[in-house]
Length: 333
Image (cartoon, rainbow, N blue to C red; front, side, top):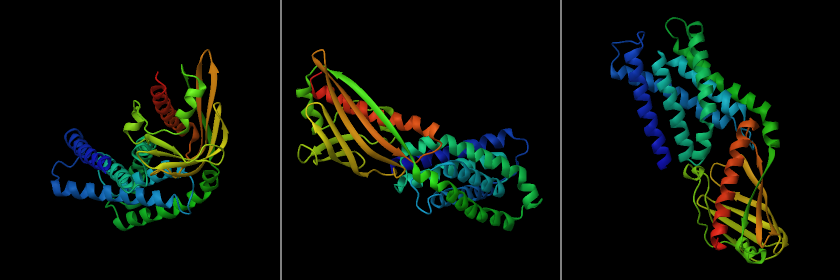
């Protein structure tokens, strides 16, 4: 909720500064506009952007899908930018309305638990690009579509028609999103302790304490503790985070050398597009110490893969490092 409030405050402040800058520097801006007129223009543009943006968000997941791709990250913001350009005059007002619309929409999704703050932050480059493209297209086509007086009925009809366009595109893209892709991330740490000493430290963890990476300050779940109901194959392990938990089942138990787990259930806000499928610990004795390797297997439905793969690996590896740093602390390093 605090993150959502901050986003709204930034949106309002940014929109105000953009409009004032445009009013002072753009010769084509109406010099006689009153603040009520400015408010109406911003409200119309922001409203159109929020309606298309949030509407597109939900339409791009109906029928239910396991991922998000070009429809969500490109077509929806293009449609929102186009709608903003149709109902607002002047470049400054359009930019301010677009900024308000995208940040208010993201704040709403974060506050409702539909998305996380980190996901919203990482999606901003795509959303900004789509909005710019949509506004440019709307500015170019507005005189031809709406006429010199800006026919509001036609503008409203065009905005309504974005719904079937988004729905149809989603149906075309849906099979790829549901297939998803598998990613594997592995990190290792060398400890001075023996494998026999390290093994019980990874089976269950009472309290995780380590230095947080930057992602954890903007929404990446922070590991807290892990419980184990019984040692051995079939044992249930639950790892708790500051946002939710992960339930695991042990499928391989070879103390003090290896432990493999399958992920049974994940409860994390705004992470329906990413599933944790498996995890493993490998311990290897080396020069009087132990090399501990942690591997996590995830399934992601985010596209384009070249962009999201980088941040997915960064997020998983950040949590690995957090756990490994805590492990080193508990091992007496």
